[in-house]
Image (cartoon, rainbow, N blue to C red; front, side, top):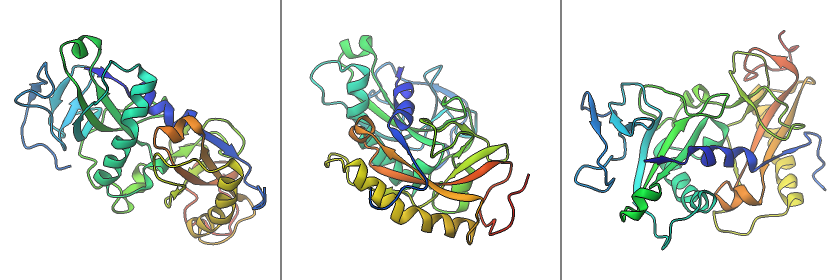
Length: 280
């Protein structure tokens, strides 16, 4: 099994552009089995992984979701490419359908405001040569190094309740000024917090709006999301947002994500902070 998570995760970051927070509007159920089962050599053999099952991808084995694992199967399918695609092409082919299935599995569209990412898996060259064309859409929780974490428990329905804040993206970098969002723990020093209420800019495959149009939409909508999130106004807090670029748009990242940004690093969440002075 070849793991495509490197590209899949980077797409979420390479395809995001920072925007000035002051920009003007003008410009699954846990498996009931125990122990480990070796993944069949042909992923579409008699006993392939199924949605809701969990994987230890480093060993290419299925594990009980109550055991440490780094991927959870969201859906299964097959690649229709007539020749072995390179990694960039495969990511473009697999990410849009896997992201769509992931939103259904998690129970909401706010995954881009979290550390939960789509991680497509597809055959390596040797498997492709044997005629294997399987596609596994999986979900992973990534850490500050953008690599999948080993975790326990199922993520099915994770966005249906306030559980979303367990997986919320907090940024140690400035969402408005730095090219990349650098994830960090929400209870450690951070500047930004991604907000639920991810805004759709179009469907995968549709034309990408201009940067000016996306900034206008963000400037109109993000301040209201920030005010709702912090429960009022605060002079030490501003609205920021992240936009897709052409590469990420082609891979299905057709949303803009609003951020609340503090004027200095904080160690607590800004949710419901109100107008009080930022805590040290």
